[in-house]
Length: 101
Image (cartoon, rainbow, N blue to C red; front, side, top):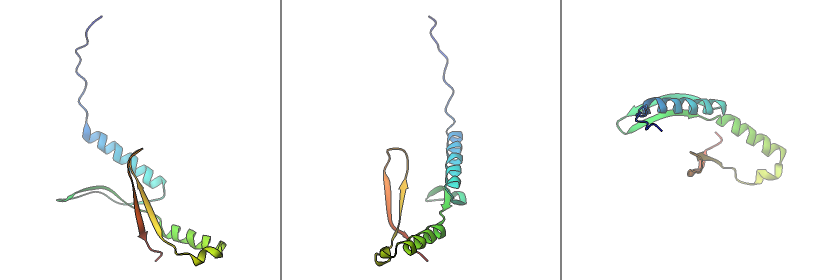
């Protein structure tokens, strides 16, 4: 049996990063978010993708729910967001992420 001495090709980290960013952008767009900016850099760091959720639609859906179930109108309403990263990774809970205005 011949001993293989072939050296594996080096990993192109920049290309991997660009591919991952493109996949993430497509997923955000598919989820109904709007991309506002890409690759914002400053001396404190870099933000790859800046996106905005459809807050207006969430608020309208909540108003519809409250109109349909009047008993819920007595309860306080708060909009939270759950930030989910990698599979089995940590989940960040942003309580009071935005208001209904």
